[in-house]
Image (cartoon, rainbow, N blue to C red; front, side, top):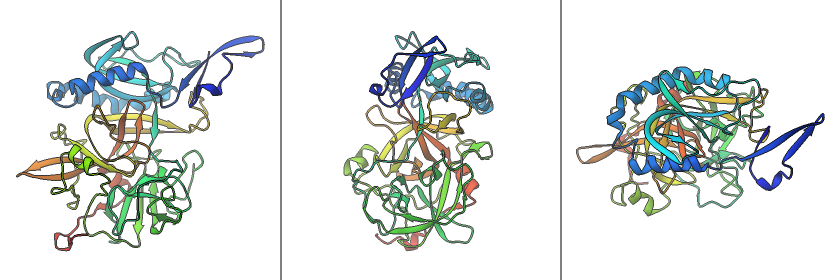
Length: 420
């Protein structure tokens, strides 16, 4: 059998392929198209709020699974070329989703179920005593390559969640937050894949200076430069066993004096628990090493993305792993295809109504909302790099991002916080 993963069914006219008088059936799968089984399981998890209120009933079991995933994810991707994502679920699915039972399990998402690549073994039925569940699903990065008009405007001073891009490039990403370089200069962070094409940039100059614009060229015909590329890290390198896909940009103008968000709609505020009288702000520079500090796991998460704006969600898993390959070449399983493995990531789900992130949100910082003394404090736990076909987001732990780029989160002085 030949499996083709495509973005439109009408592209494939034939149902069979002949080679040396041998007949091979062709099976097509739509990329990014969520499977019915995955949608059904996701509906159960959202309805039951499994990774929210019911988390503490399974806290120790989930910690054990997360520890196992970090150790075995690399070998799983090496042995199974059609493996896309390794995650966890509070429900096991049988008979293509017609039977769903509450049970904590390890989920392996692949491009096509019931098909085992040539010369490879089947997925394991059990890992370290935990049952597995195989579903169809894909992982993809979150830049935005569209050419349509955006509501993003030139921001002066710059704000968290703004649209940014490489000058002359129509790929769009998100300004995640502000950092301090070793020189003491102010910079911003986003994803490296917003500026580099991983399929063509096997050995790029990761310290090559080039101009960064805000908004991106995708949002404005002649955007103004806001900074210069300073350094990048690709996900094929690891910082303390965590894959990091990140870039730091040295700012040249439109300097912020506080960590304000580029809110697009008032409804975003109310949906995330804020208001016009109580706006979200990240000026403290507070971070949380979520790998070692999970007591606040039940706290809500928010992010401000250039495309989807301000959204909220909940942490599903710490220890997610996913593989990204070039969709222009092939999305099946050729051994020769270059790919990047994202290891030891945080997985976050949105609400039943809205996904946590979409294309264009790459680089968005993710914050947990800590409430103390009646006031909300935002604590950064990671940065969005991509997402799944079942509407969850892949987030790199922030401590690994900062460490790999050798920068510190910027803390804005309260004395300089005049209204912007």
